Image 1 (spheres, rainbow, N blue to C red):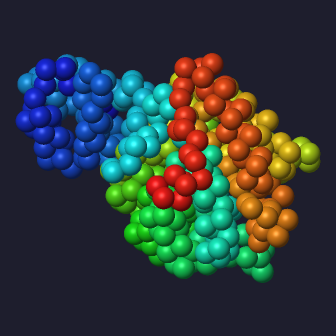
Image 2 (cartoon, one colour):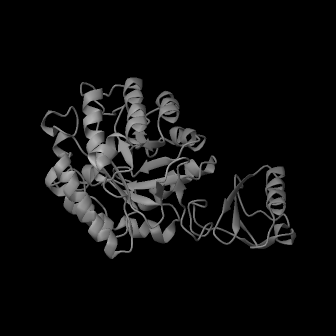
Length: 350
């Protein structure tokens, strides 16, 4: 159920509705919009009939039929904008957000070399894995907390926000401590206890689509996070498993406008995992921006042939520079903006 407050409703009237919801044993979710505040109700097994429509400040009471309630545009017609205190970057507005960096943090020297280049090119986020859930137990698993500390240094040096994956409760605690955005990877999209823990975190969440997830399953995973009170969720299309063998996955760009029709949450694209091949990353990145993605997350490595993970899908820094210039041109056609390219000195002394 959704309670829509009038545009003139006071904060006290909103709080009064929330108190009544909670007195009935349910959970209230106050979601401010551009013109009005909507209050979602979760925890109820059926329709709630408690006279909410008679309370001061209430405009209407709507029954939400979709299984995902808080994620739905029925609750919030205007787009969610995810902000980062103390930083100019936002996700969900007219600007495009660019996240770039290596698949895994291998060393301080490797991470700093890549960070300097992606910052110079105009990326706002540095992506890198401190914890790597790999198909083989013998593959590089990441540096753990040491990798997170390296990324925290990168934030201080280059002014880049940090997005990195959490794979369990322990790593999520540490990612929340060191990072700016918690990534939930494709393999954990339906790890419901981890989603709930991310929903209790104080940092925004980047939720990647599972390798075989339907659109509804994708949105329901986001609902798990939001139902715990964390409304700063960004979705990420990173390719699904199909029968094709010319790419690692099939990047489903049709899901971007589909999500935007059903949900107010921002959605970005990952053309690196979506293709698995370096020569296909740039074309699919261009296409993702063209269909309306709110940003990109791209793997970049200064020496991908020697990368400990996903080297074959990582761009060389010069290729990333070219991609950024092309994406700027596409963004301009769509009336969107991107962060400016920095001089080498600015990137280092940010």
